[in-house]
Length: 325
Picture (tube, one colour):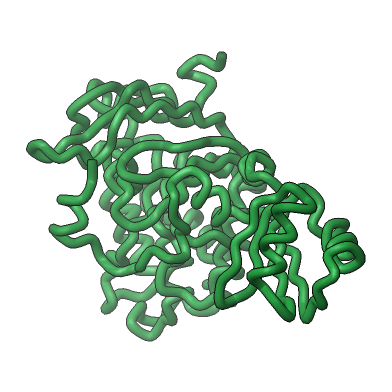
């Protein structure tokens, strides 16, 4: 097992409770250095609370946590010196130019002037904003502002960069651009990326993934490992008689199936092989057939009993907190 010094992030039974309401419960993590690690879960799952504890913005009520080998409670200053943070909501000053925003941040963290000039120029180049360095932030698109915030998070050369919902509110094309920059900076700088997300497509970018719900990690592994745990492909058949087709699937093939408005749905190890076999042996005309390999949404459904796509993306309410365990 890796030691604390070999890990970018480690937690031991980490927890946070508000009054009688637990927000994070018994969290055990071991995140290697240099990987992209993601928390996948709906809003209100405890992801942001966890990030705030790891970044020393929130004091845990149980357990311990280490970032870059340092205890977040006993050594908060050492932790802060080794991390960068991109908040879920933008915190940029809209009246500053991109260059001014980065230089101001560098000054706050005591970066020497000459060093900050070189660093700011390099970071603007890294995130593709060099030509826009003299434009005020208020003129930037959402994607440009996000890239500037990522550059700001890198100013102090962190060992771990925390990103809380890094592409929330951005269109798919802009998300792709953001991830191109994130992959490049990890390759060039060898830092650890630790992010939260409720976007399934974004979670696919992670080397390691933890599915979080109701303040607890339900399962952890690589995206491929997690999808492999789900039993087979999903097959959706539309036939001339869906009720009869579902019955035949159960009686003849020994596979549980359900019929509904969308057709007959079942799960099977090799969907591509099952469909022609059903067409040849069932004696029921098939109108259409769709075979879908396991997805992270299927993994989430398997472990939580609901799909993450069904979760709304609005802000957490008091009622939501009350429903947590």
